[in-house]
Amino acid sequence: MSTIQFIHSGWAYIVLLVLIIATFNALFKFFGNKEFDAKDFRISLFALITMHIQLLIGIILFFLKDYFTTIKEVGGMGEVMKNSELRNLIVEHPTTMIIAVALVTIGYSKHKKKLVSKPKFKMLAIFYTLALILVLAKIPWKLWFS
Image (tube, rainbow, N blue to C red; front, side):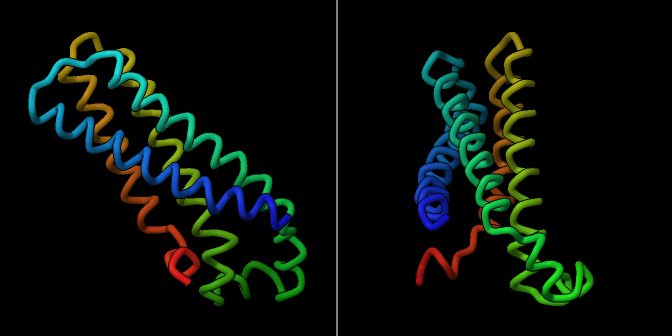
């Protein structure tokens, strides 16, 4: 389990970096009225792929940590929700990150349906920015800087 935790934590740095690059690329090119090219496609695709890999690692980790036993031990979900640390680990972080992955997936899918550059960058900018905000809000910063 510690290996999976290490991979999940380490991969998170890559995910964050790639998501920031993809988001700012879409924003700058949208507002700069630039043409969408193969590099832009690869950047947005790489963000999608890294986020999905992180999601899979996170799901594996969630089940390896056996939070279901933890929930039983503390007296149920009502008690988990009263404990901010457990609530974050078991509910808030996973749910928020799943939503962020869904937003990236939706943005990527929608951008492919657009035929010209401006709408492509608009879809990526909107959905990737929302995903980035969620990711930044739920990164366990205390663990990253301790």
